[in-house]
Length: 307
Image 1: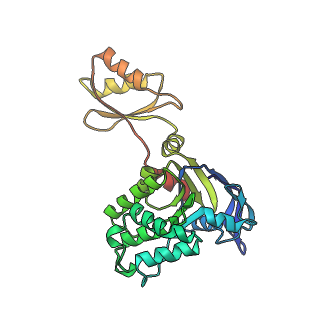
Image 2: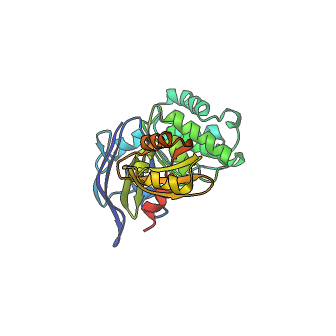
Image 3: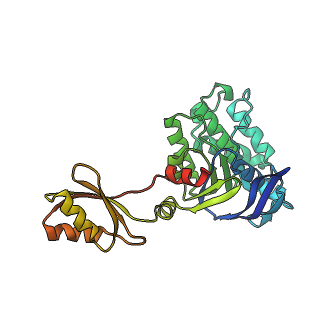
């Protein structure tokens, strides 16, 4: 199911937590929703889930307007807030049964749905324990199970791997990817490698405004601007190699690094790979390395949000 957000704004007094943003999430898409603390991520997610009312703008979830059809929207969405809403003294099975009843799952389907969530979220060995006896990773699994107990079409996950160790992060990441084959997911996180490994698309928000929207590769391409190549050439002298490379029509600049290695930057919207290879052949040089440099997602995030 699709989510459409148009000119969405949320103000607190004179402060705009979310400032006139618009975007869409398609059915079956996993959207990574990124931004520094205070950027407006959680506020946006709470408005989508009807926890907060927008100051202006529209949110349409599968054809339902959150302002006028909030009950219908809530039935379509599973929500895992940043602070996992668990009753720590309840056994896992009792808690999931309680959540199923709150979501008005038909009584005849509750046991089957609990069994399914226990299986999907890998809780079988822990299902008879009280929640306060579980590790942080298994508590997050219980949180995911409660978000999905009513079989929603859309999942909103706010920092689902907060406080987990690396092994637990991988487990939750794989679980989200598996769930994403069937559901639309908006995932907020500060762990950038997790976004690349999990999400189909990335949206970055800063100071309430969207500053980037695209795949990890497209964001790199937009940020990079010019092709940057690290090359290693043997047999020639530094002076001769630098002059030959600088004479290539596609090259904007070249500098020597160390140990026969050079950095060559191409002119905008051009590639120098073929020209460099031909240059080495013409001069009978041995080309042992030619690697295109890529900006890390972390660098792109910092460039877009440090202002």
